[in-house]
Amino acid sequence: MPGNLFIVAAPSGAGKSSLVNALLKREPGIKLSVSYTSRGPRPGETNGVHYHFVSKEVFLNMVERGEFLEHALVHGDLKGTAKSAVEDRLNAGEDVLLEIDYQGARIVRALLPKTISIFILPPSKDELEQRLRRRAQDAEDVILRRLQGSREEMAHAHEFDYIIVNDRFDTALEQMVTIVHASRLRRDSQLIRLDSLLQQLLT
Ligand SMILES: Nc1ncnc2c1ncn2[C@@H]1O[C@H](COP(=O)(O)OP(=O)(O)OP(=O)(O)O)[C@@H](O)[C@H]1O
Ligand SMILES: Nc1nc2c(ncn2[C@@H]2O[C@H](COP(=O)(O)O)[C@@H](O)[C@H]2O)c(=O)[nH]1
Image 1 (tube, rainbow, N blue to C red):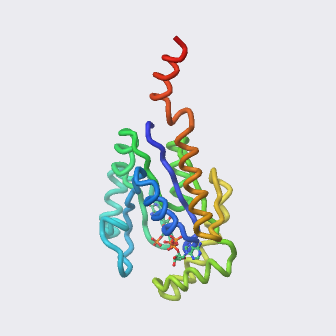
Image 2: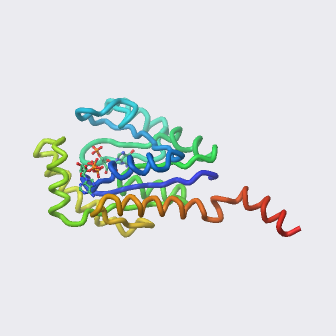
Image 3: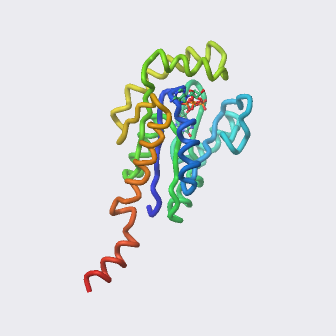
């Protein structure tokens, strides 16, 4: 796997998408995998950019054809990462980032153990609720379902390689950038380059 695979997970509203978008601006070499989902688009969401929005039937057909690297039921909606969005890019040496939940993260880690996984925590329960409400994108019942689901998601934080508390946005972003840079310095991320350098240095 010549490219690095990153997973970012968090309870809904912790600021995962905001951080990932800011990270991708800082590190344009990282490609974000666009997930498939059976949920409908929110105002402002575009098909093919935020998600591939498909019907439940289409999603389940893709499951049957083995087209997903992982998929899960998240907050009542089907969500999944297509194999094609990940494997070709990694093999071409590109870094890929998945914004997925803890269930999907487990599956991916089992398949690709070198995956670098990051979990984002909110600074408090109250702030998490405030962020969901200030975002003003979901109906009350959806917000309540997400808050309930957030406990379950956070109970799996310890399964991840890195944990970032998103209190001050800029600090959390710097921490994500640090993880990305450190990952690229791992020996196995540099094997091809190091091989020729070491050969030259040792002869
Ligand atoms: N450090 C921060 N301080 C204050 N507000 C923040 C911070 N980070 C993100 N936010 C705000 O919190 C809200 C939720 O953020 P965001 O949509 O990125 O969350 P998310 O974890 O991706 O949620 P979901 O999983 O539901 O998509 C947004 O309005 C965002 O602007
Ligand atoms: N297992 C997967 N989880 C995914 C995927 N894409 C997104 N998600 C998770 O869904 C919620 C965000 O939901 P939203 O309705 O607010 O967009 C969050 O927990 C994501 O991590 C996926 O492909 N697989």
